Length: 260
Length: 264
Image (cartoon, rainbow over all chains, first blue to last red; front, side, top):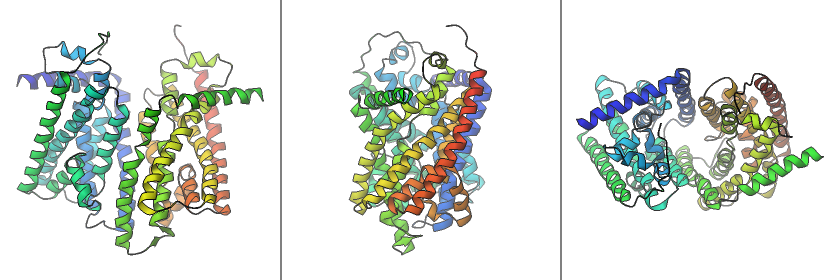
């Protein structure tokens, strides 16, 4: 409860900070929504021409894209520093968070809000509404699926970026991992063979961010819900464990940093 | 002649600089590998489902090599929009204005220098993957014509991206414009789906816009080279370079006129 109040206070401060430049904030939100819409048009063209890919149609794409966009947006909004954690680690900027009486990981990743995340988050709901699968209970499942997908996504980012404790500067690798996660998550899962699907549930858990929550949104199933819950719990546990393990190796150069 | 050698020297310096961190260069270029693999999965299933060896004149092999070149063009683009925008926002443009070179041509030489090896590395990694998946690349004539068209594509991209960067004179953040430009290049350039698979009405619109001359033209020339197509692509590039180049010159002149510099 104490940590939740702390998070609320940080998010409030972050929101006030990004709202300082309202025109810029609005431009980023609307720009990201337009960006997503234009990107999705490619799938509309594809499915207009080829109708379906192994039983996967445009409606499935709307839901998958919706969950993925909202989950991405949620992490960008509330845990924006998860995207550049490796940079913070390798440049010795963890010093600031270590000197504070709060959980280091939580404090670090929640200290930045990416404005465009609001555009992604909102667009995800629009995409779901347009999917043809919309229903009130489906909306509840969409929200739950998005929360669990966001958990897996944030955990994956922390896991990958925490490798900086051992490997130092690794922005290329983290970019590669991020792009792989998003690219694999957005494509119809039916195009992948069993070997590829194994990768999508383990090394690059894109299935937990796109196809599996989308399946849960379309129709309720205890089995899929359990898969999502277990996936989120396992990846979150691994992320926290790897970060803590890495933190023991952390050294800083006592550089003077200003955290705004 | 002296002014050309000045920009050639800037180009060479950036070119050499881009080789200073080979790990960075290779790491960034590896991004094409998962993309090509996913494309193969998608188009392999699609061609199988269609039950045909060729869709609108393109086989699976053609499609994959087309996508390889299209991705190479996209992934090797320089970040000139952000560079120019940063120069405008942090005021460093002021230090460049009093140098004995044109700000725009300096950025152009710089951006070309950044692009060359990035494109080369992307093409190498992309080719290795695609060759392994669908077999040998198209013949040498395709390489030659596509190479010339790629140079036009880079110039065209520079004009558009620099124009977006100069928007920083008017707005605080240009990110939204960069995203939207990139997505228009995706959809109207035929980056993820060759334009040949689009409905006829959309093909007509896309082929009249600069995005297709940036991505589709060079990539299509690569897999099915012909002098007619080459002439068409080069003509489209020339027209759009002229239009966007004039717009860029005007925007720059106006921006610099309204520039206010405080302090030193």
